[in-house]
Amino acid sequence: MMSKYLIIGGSAGGIGAVEAIRRLDNDGKISLISEEPYQPYSRPMISDFLAGEATFDKMQFRPSDFWVKNKVKPILGRRVTSIDFDNRVVKIKESNEISFEKLLISTGGKPFVPPIDGSEKDGVYTFTNLSDAQLIKERIADVKDVVVIGGGLIGVSITEALLKLNKKVTLVELKDNILNLILDKTAAGFVEESMKKSGVNVLTDVSVEKILGRDSDDEKVGAVILTDGCKIACDLVIVAIGVVPRMELVEKSKVKTNRGILVDEYMATNVSGVFACGDVVEAYDFIVKENRVLALWPLAYLGGRTAGINMVGSKAEYPGGTVMSALKYFNVPIISVGLINPDNQNKTYDVITTLDHDNKVYKKLILKDDKLLGLTLVGDIEKAGIYYNLMKENINLRKYKENLVSEEFGLAHLPRYYVSELLKGS
Amino acid sequence: MQRIYVKEEYCMGCGLCEVHCIVKHSKSKDFVKAYRKESPKPIGFVRVDKSLPISFSIQCRHCEDPPCIIACLSGAMNKDEKTGAVTHDTEKCIGCWTCIMVCPYSAIKMDLKDKKIIAKCDLCPDIDTPACVDNCPNEALVFQEDPP
Image 1 (cartoon, rainbow over the protein chains, first blue to last red):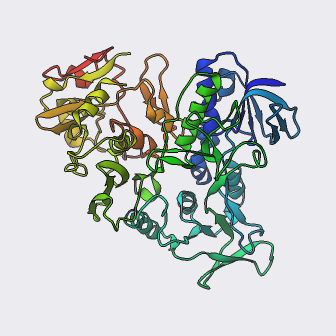
Image 2: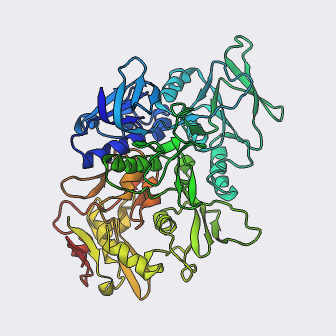
Image 3: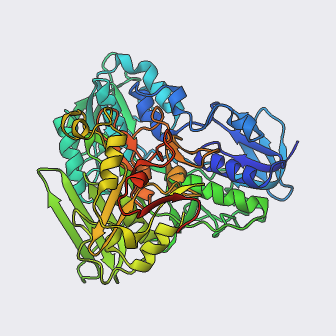
């Protein structure tokens, strides 16, 4: 079979590409291969699914007529085994091979599981897709105690879901505060405090050394031993340490990679007609001004969309992204973008903060050379978008620093040329 | 599509647009009840940004290519194909606040009353002219196809 456009991966990046291609090319054949046998769904919602707060219906990322409406041939529940870049053919397990003109690799990430003694035992799970959530859900009724390894977004989100299911959860974080890749200690402290109040046993500066079996059945998880020697009994262990790009299809191929697949500003790889996006690539970060792996849903969609436009033959540049997180967990709304807590011994950065611990409001802005490079908002987060766009558009704030964290801060406190354009434009 | 535009030079910063938006989106549609009695308190989708003498009213611009839709994690945010209005499906919104992170106008609100989802300007679809525009005493707000 021949497909003009072939997409590997059916999550945010793949969907973004489909929508972009169809806007510009009504007829070119699109095929999309996904290992997951489902309609497009929202991965970030798997914790809501586990908690019983979202049905699959609610998780659907696009209406159920998505494939039909966009004239896409979905090949679901199938795994691509190899890509022949010279002959432009993709081989699929238990299905016919497909040749392509333009290919998008949006295979995403896979959970990183470090070698832990006992991690092969029954009851150790990762938590990144719906299948993981389903597997955990199937046995959750018999579970009382859970150990979650990793205090990042995935770890915190599953902890909240498990708590809603009345499980006793211990969260184990290697570093000295949870969410340390996206929050400074102060901001993370708000979440940690709220978690502890809800009954979560949060342990920092420690990790799991060994997973033990049960007395009755050594194959099943019974406890963990921490690096400080403590033993915590549990029926389930969730490994939520992070994700790494899923690059097996391009290993030993002519597609250039580093930590992720390398792409240019058009999301094109070094192989003509082959594009990549999402958690599998190193794409442009507008804060650090270099390409890096950023495993974030909105950026995967945006990358897919950019790739789609270029696959059709039109030109679009990827506007770039950065580390950007919006959090809703444990009733502490937080938005953080860009730099969090850079080393400031040489006073390279202007750091503006306000903290109202009682009302759970914390704001922190990090500027360098009068440009905003970092944002953390806790509690009062509604103005986040204004700051985000100042960062994205690299606006000089030399004369405008005074009111940046005031309560009444708004567009009226910003450079006129910037605001007039905004108010006109759409 | 028709959008709400502000003529900054006419805006006095009186805040009536905010008031009328709140009342329009309240249960009672009555000033006194909306402000004093309704619980939970109705929320408005208009904000007046002021740094005197500059002031202007801000609400969702219903962008041509909305960043909030690109960022939406659940698929709740959509652009109505017919009207061009940017709308959110209250059944699908999960209150992840990702749209709030990217809106250059900060025009999206948190509705923390019960469902903890977002709230935003709906252009008052049941009346010809949005309440904020209709009640602006100095005609600083207009509802039209192109920027003034």
